[in-house]
Image (cartoon, rainbow, N blue to C red; front, side):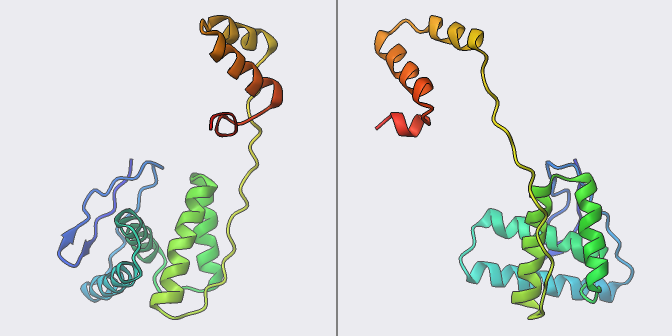
Length: 167
């Protein structure tokens, strides 16, 4: 678990833990830098709330943008920003990196009113797990209700999703 320390509009986001295990280190160099970063974060928070984003989205975007600002700042080149996200992709799942890209993209386009042209990470395709014949038979033998057996055999035999079988 990681933590990022930031003060935004009187709220203390101290030890805002994240499940991905990424630690957002506090690279604050001067008080002016901290104050300008907090102004940007407050502007981001206001923009998100005025557009009706959920509380969790606001918290998540504020956290991810603050980590980005602590690391890269607002005047970073496109190459610096790309290096930042490539570095994240080596430690985090690509979906998490894409969430961070979305947060930073929103910040640049809606708060800073700057163009932001960073592409999302390609997500790996997942192959669903398939049961063996023995596992399927074992599951069907555990069902005692004949109606349930019929439903499960129909779902399995036709390759249906549960939502397609249950009305």
